[in-house]
Length: 224
Length: 249
Image 1 (cartoon, rainbow over the protein chains, first blue to last red):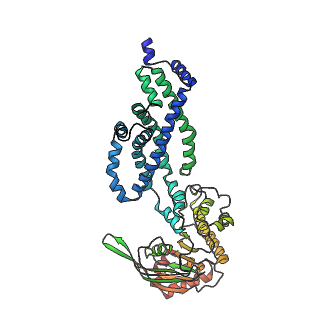
Image 2 (image 1 turned 90 degrees about the vertical axis):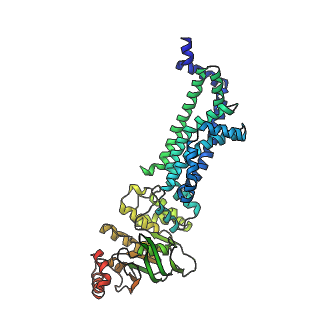
């Protein structure tokens, strides 16, 4: 029974563990550290992926040039990228963010490239014919057409990125939820593993429900 | 000053068996404040001509010069409304309106004039095709004094909507006297709207007839004067106008 409890603790045991970790302040600190890494990686991945995706979607020459590297990057195991980045740049915050972003950038590129290909050239002609500035054309005519694709990349991105951040923390960090989970694993503390997991899943469900879905409704409601 | 002269020696499009000449030796001058209708059979290059004048097509052999030297502000209405589907109707007008137009509340007043009061915040997907066309015309008119380039603005509209839209256009033009180049298939429409009628030949399009409008103001599209002028033109140049007559009958 005791062994069974250790392998699969009851929800009450997990909740108790969660309260203990939370009351000590340790959980909040580690979750905040991981969230910061998730946020930084997400921003870098979205910015780089969007820029590359737009260029590939809008310029056939760049699409042909970068298509093979993109395919390789898409199929590169996350773990391999993490290991290589840690080896090449050292065990530091920059490496964590870079490794995670590099894992996510290819899928953002694929999504945004599709969006850039689907941009309505007739609407861009309207912008040209009324002599809108490049900035206005990009922000008010081009970007809104990419929004559904960016939202898809965002929702998918956040779900993937936090999982990859945990792997990176497990391998090369001395802080964060991934690092803590590594410690719990060594002590076979499944209740703590599940407590941290519950907090993280809950947090991202909250982000999805309270932030992303309303944002998506607001930005892409015109398509309904 | 938004008058202009376009002189196209040749404009070609790539075709399956080599380049196709769309426009050839076409010279056209439109004076400041003039309302010109360009007529021609389908496929004669009218839209290509409008795109060249609008600066949307620069791949041609020829010149385009504006009276004031540089390209003036312009308002373009395409064959389809081409409104930004994520913006409300008023926001669509504000997007292209200059600061003075916005400050004067011109987007909202033009929408009212076009019969779209109460639909300012509606996105294009929520209103009918006719209402979208009205908003597209209002957008073309939003900057006062702009060169107006209209590509068959009333084609395939039901008669009451087309009549209403023509009235909006004529009312604004009478007040502001913009330079207008309007493409149409419809000879009666051209005789109702324009100071001058330009006829293009079948492809490759070139100017084959340049006529001042014989019908005096006020003109009614269903009136006797327009019908008589149309009949006289068809009698005098039956071959030239056959393609146009087929569409307007």
